Length: 422
Image (cartoon, rainbow, N blue to C red; front, side):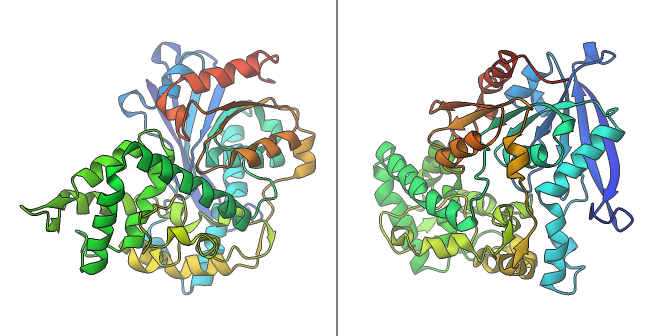
């Protein structure tokens, strides 16, 4: 690969271009034999929120190798991640109150990320229209891009990321919990002996003061959060083999060091705290606080209680207790509380502009997606112009990372309709 790094300065608040600034980093990648050629641009919009762009180590994800045959690829670290003025625990120490921190974090939502992308496109890449590939939250960003700056887009490819245009956080979690329960049922069908084993692990944790290597106490509800992997392709297997090695000792009377270290890593957020902090605020639009929706809606699904057996694992839900029980999230507690109570958020989507959209969009909708409801995705597709969907249950939410076949199909869908609009 031929790689070129770009670091640009942008306003923290795009409505106040003369105010405070941050830096945004992007990595430009192309086939070295084509480094001197004029190639179409493909911007990758990473999932998240709070996820940095993939690093091209070992060739990167499968879609990247395929894209480099024809495109110059731009891997942007969304503001607050990677090398783009990363937000960490030390960042929170600089604010006098949780409200001040929340005000700052509100500049790290989709509208600001799209403005960063447009600035990068215009100042670094010669104002040339580019195609985008949006995975998961990257699809949310795509809809904001089509709402705010469609003139910068030649075509959009979306994988598991058509969000509900009007859906609130409450709506999202009312749809999500039943899907997570179904994933649990399928998991226990595949690994029936894990019903008893995971229950025994949970009972042990509930009865003992179990400490993780970083000193945090392991609770049953924290153990449940490893279920976030149930919606990914290797998730069932990853969880099963972790549980397989949970106990140690001649009579399995203690939890193994390997198990505890793995659970700590899987349930900590040192590498991506914004994923937890901003999880519910990405659904905030207009009036109304998100108000810890995942916690409130969980009460409507008592089967997810940590005392129930078989124990149900949870999914992509963030709870208020996580910001006191998890070491890496404690510095963000005041900010998270203030975000949850925030009475108003800016609009992220423009329904009228989306309805009139002319940019070709090809979207993979994963029928069994645990994170993004397929029904909501199809409803959104009906309300956005020039969108073609491919509904499939061949892949889980991370299908585009597992094979280049997903990206290839989406590109061909746009080609068959005349190709990108240069």
